[in-house]
Length: 321
Image (cartoon, rainbow, N blue to C red; front, top):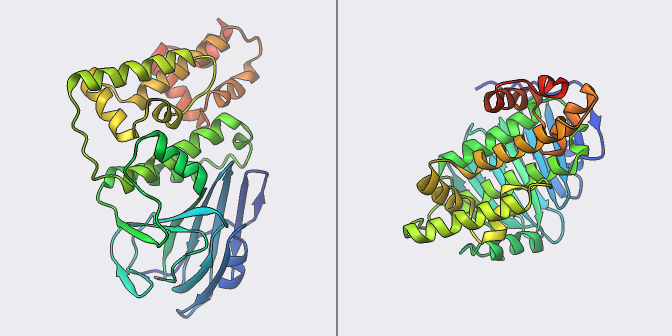
């Protein structure tokens, strides 16, 4: 196994984005803002690490990468629930003396973090969410998941949720837009919702999804009603789930059974229509990116492809026409 990590050659800092390359395990731990951690290097060789932190209101995301085996201990942000999920499985993790094999999700109160021993190649996602925010979401969605005092480790049985979470983070990191797009509140909310819902999917993958056809239709009707009543403002799938009291998996199941379409595609189509209406009223081509960002599209290449696929013309053509 190679112990080479190709991190970014320079640091980057904005209001909502902090990206830094490190060359010492203790220095690496100190760059995790709000966390009180101690990292001890266990394997031989020069240390190379990279931290990419995204601040999304009450949710903090950190992609933590390094190339040496380490012992990790300490605490997360006080009053928050901390999640740790490996985005790449490169070896077993030891959590408070117990071996964890395969992709897994660790959940713990910020002031009750377990001691970890991680392998040489580490690529993990750290998520810190205020416990009141998380509890509110769980209550609104009627989730059976309970926040308990001691740390819990979940083997990732629903691989689709893990892949979706990994893809969100990969795309966010590889977009290389800096912190510019994150200045838009709608994009921060969209990313916060995407990550939160996928974490909940992983933790509640065993919940039964069987619903009668009439119950499925009622849920879809309520979701559509909420969407139609909020067409003039960006909203997320998390908002939709909270408003009707259902998890993302349950909502997706109902949409798929009732309409043969998933709610993400439905929401995306509504957003694209909102962008189109706004572009038809604009006069400057430079406003396309701002309009798209306001409606939650931060990946401009994908936005253009999806826009053309839905309407048969480019956003620029709509603006000119």
